[in-house]
Structure formats: C-alpha cells, structure tokens
Length: 226
Ligand code: DC
Image (tube, rainbow, N blue to C red; front, side, top):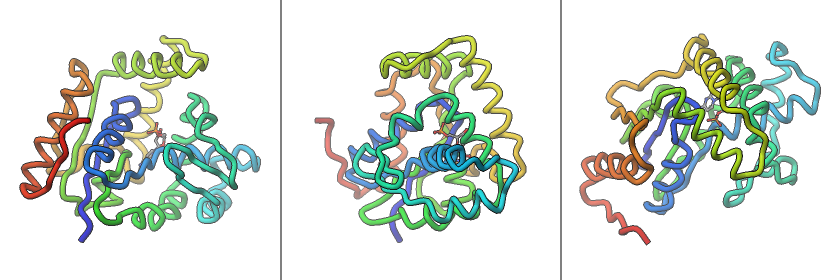
C-alpha cells in the first residue's frame, strides 16, 4: 500500500504551503485537490456552465484535459496556474465543489495520484472521503482574520488586487459553504492531528507535522532541511 498523508483544513490555513514543503522534504508526490476544483470552475465559466447544471459539470469534470507539470497546471495545454489563484476563481470553485456529481466524477482521478514512494494530499475531504485509510491525517486551522491576512499578503506578493476586509468576509462565507454542504463537508477526520496555526510560523507547523510522520513511519529516512 502506498503511504499517504492527508492535510485538510479551511481556505488559507496554510495547507498548500505545508503540503508542498512536506512533499518536497520527503520526496513524495503531492495532490493539490483545491486546484482541481479551481480549474473546473475556470473551465465551467469559459464553457458558460452554471453551478446548478450538475450533469454538464460532472461531464466536464470527467473530461478535463489537465496536467500537473512541476508547479504549473495546464488546462488543454494552457498554463492556468495564475488564473486559478484569484479570489473569484476560489469562490467559483467552492460552488462547483458543492455539487455531489462533480465530487464523484473527480474521485478516481484523485485516488490515482497515490503512487510510490508516497503521496501528500491537500484539501477539504482528503482524510474523510478520498483517502479514509490514510496513514497520517492532519487537520490544519487558523482564525479567519489570520487566514485573510495570509491570503492578502500572498495576493499582493503575486501583484494581484486584494482588499483585507473583503477577504475576511469571503473567507467566512466560503467556510460556511464548505462546512455546511451535504457532500464531503469540511470537518476534521477521525484520528486526525489538529494543528491550530494562528500563532505558529510555517517552520513550527512543519515541525509538528513531521513529528507525527516520524511517529507513524519510524523507519522513514527524512532528509534534513537543505
Ligand atoms: O484550497 P483551495 O482554496 O484551493 O480550494 C478551492 C475551493 O475548492 C474551496 O472553496 C473548496 C473546494 N475544495 C473542496 O471542496 N474539496 C477539496 N478537496 C479541495 C477544495
């Protein structure tokens, strides 16, 4: 069985950063499941399909011509890595992600990412639905204000437009939608290690996660930081 670590949590909790650093450190594969929903939202917008047209959305999801190439995400060969990181695309992603048919259509695709030597899977339902038998489950949280501030800095660094109070409101709204939807709602998986990161640095969060990984895989060789 391929070793799997799931990192779930709300938007802006730092899952993406921690998952990427962890996957790099271990030399494992990484699944950014949020990017899948973001690309689907982008493709649906371009095709003029609204989130209430479930069957068409699921069809689109099954036929997405998607490729992860290093840090780049290609849709029909076009690099959409930057386009999918906007707040509006994140909000649209949250809407398509609430459609049960869409989630079902993307399940096999996500599970196929579990390959040797191991997978770090980042999302909302990685430990609950997609990989319920994962070896290590982490649930990463932070206050909405802190998450909005982190997102604000990220967007500014990328030269994108951002407004802090709008971001707080949008994060709360997205949390609500992600936690209260009927399929695969955002919640801590059973037996997950919960890490509350509001007052922690990235290194401190990574340290806590690595401790858990070492406990689970005592024989795993983990290279020191480079
Ligand atoms: O993590 P993110 O912000 O890139 O995710 C974008 C949206 O996709 C988020 O609002 C919820 C949804 N999502 C989901 O429902 N399930 C996942 N496993 C990952 C993301």
